[in-house]
Length: 143
Image 1 (tube, helix red, strand yellow):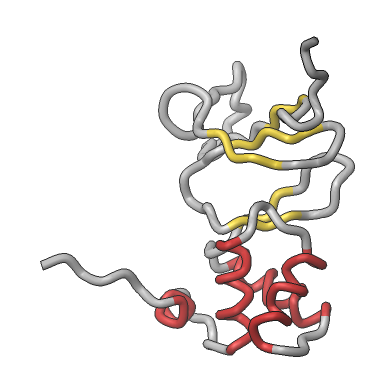
Image 2 (image 1 turned 30 degrees about the vertical axis):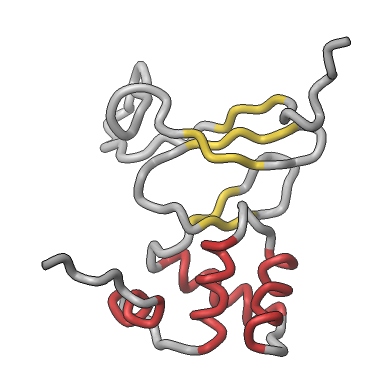
């Protein structure tokens, strides 16, 4: 018999976080979104539970990120964005024009995907790669 997937509330409890309507709504909004920024996440949470301050969203994002339920990415020149895909060491494609962000699986081999020439004694467990270019909507059209 296969165990049923955990509810969002059970996931929060499982990492030692108090279950609140705002945290449940935020985690579900992050997972339903596509690398959303704080303003978009706050709007999504408000659609689900009503008023929530931006400060409360930041605090909840910090807790969810620290607990490993959410990943924060910060493409250069862009505000922080958040995603629910965690623990698999994937990378990102970022459009230089519109800022769209898409996931791309591990580049080659096993995590951390890339090995530096000199690890300087570090125990490396992750590589963070961002590929920059133009998305299909922004790239020049062939005539």
